[in-house]
Length: 494
Image (cartoon, rainbow, N blue to C red; front, side, top):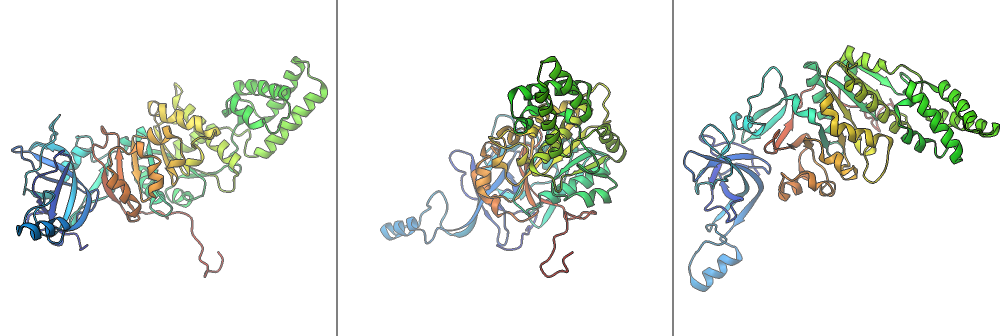
């Protein structure tokens, strides 16, 4: 479609005739050679004097009114060349645009009014001042902001800098395999580390371990470097876990009551076995009932394997020391991963919500493969604690970044609650399942997301943080290695 370029005084094109009757659409004829891509934000003069209209491109196509059926029929019948569909006869590219808002000369939004673009008015790119308006209307503090990519504007681009504090209300990152989700997480990890922001990764595939090492963070392999305490579970969760291991309801009652007591004093495995003996005696259980309960609980704990008596305060100590902590789940089964996520999230929330927080600063927690831990229509150990953090985490300084390639398989609240959403290329079927969370984006844009280039994302969110969605090319600059190495069929097997 031609190389993007800006002509003359950065005029991209002109508004074509009158806008659509509902005032929600405008049409423009770009200048020759200019490609305006879906999602791009542009501005044009308003019919209201000294005001501009902000527009978002939602469609771009070629139109040939000279050979249209309507035009030919009218010409053959009457001999007259007339306009059809409100557009003049001719052959040209046309951009269909959504009318977003009206601004005065100081780029202040004109409340309660949507302006009409001036017919034949010039179509121009937004500038940095418009970006400030788009991101909350406040000029960002340069000492706080981080640069995450570029917004393409014709033949140039604007650097997109964000205030990390917009992430404190949680982030959802979605995209298909290989579209840029993990790269984006790596960019954020580097940028936030430079600012001294605390970060935790829950890393099921070991994608971030090398980058964390290069950044001076700490990698902890679950079950090897650290064993997590069982007492982080609730009694109900413990009951669900042991259900298939402890055969009778009476034995499960004994085990759960013993667990309640161990949980209250934050004891370990030996404490649980001891308490089972005490509870069995109090409930007048037979000796064989007691022995069966103990044996079954030991089998359960041996199967869980990653649970142990390590002091969980080590997590807080390591995070305070390096400000970057990566939990590796490689090699764990579904039960172990679920338990690990639930346990870590419970501990992080507790460490931040106490009167004297063990973790000194607010922390961003990235949960990769999030659909496994907050699935739709399925109960997991981690689901309740993650949703609890989504609801209340920002009050204690705990923010989530949920990363997934299957958003439609996630719990609806977990999709909707994050205030910021970063959308890479992903199938329309996946987006259709979460359409309720993308109300700012028109259907035309939603349809085109599956065709976006790798590394390009739409950033959207709550209106008070991101007033209008923007299309961003995530920076290709990183100091750390991306992901785990992928072997080649033609390599030496290493």
